[in-house]
Length: 338
Image (tube, rainbow, N blue to C red; front, side, top):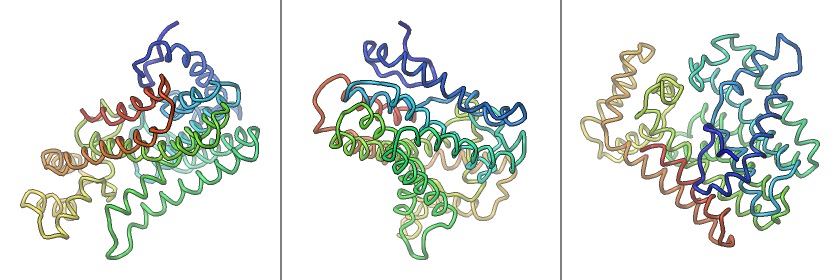
């Protein structure tokens, strides 16, 4: 039995990985089928991001959570595919809103087919995910609808920004909980529920998953500044170019509001306000300045704190390989910052 494919995180337990391998292969096969089937004209954009790869973190978490019950079964695998389809749908929409040129090292769908096709393709994948969860029953439909609502609310709150005088950092953390944490929480919840692990375990893993999601996105904020496009598949500083403040910038703004910002930080904020970041050279200079500032380490520490808080949610679980692997899963998501 081979180990998990390269696009998922290793769990450090060869026996557990060998158990998950066949289910992950089934997820991949069903996902490939789910993104096609309309007609040849539509299949190219709808399969674009799935074919580009990705870590498949959410379906992996669904399968891993199922180890706390009776393990993976057909319903667990269907739930894992539905979660990944939902995630892919959000990426099509996000890339349009962010004007991101790259996704997973390939041109973003809107760069190839235009904004309208990219948006409609995302809608199509949402519909196919909904069809899968409908087959799982009313509980899955409700969970999917609640998650979809939070995904939309998170994007709306990010777009509208905090209220005047509001806590920018707190607002951003809520955006991350909605946009990223909610779907990861649902992935874990599905695995527990459809493996028979019980309601208590499902609730515990839902809390764990949401915190893991926040930690993951905070880690991405650091990686976006510290890595290059070849590593991440995205242009560093894309959010800055679109006027979206990630955690390092928000920490600078908090320092400015508290009257304790240093000269380098003040200069970064001036450049974000005044420079034309549509120019690649200007964007690269601001990214380099941020990368050198201590707020990046502060954001890194926040990501680690959220991951540790997620692991603490696992305390009541019985000791064993699944609990160890879930702890490792949270740690690996933030270790990517190293």
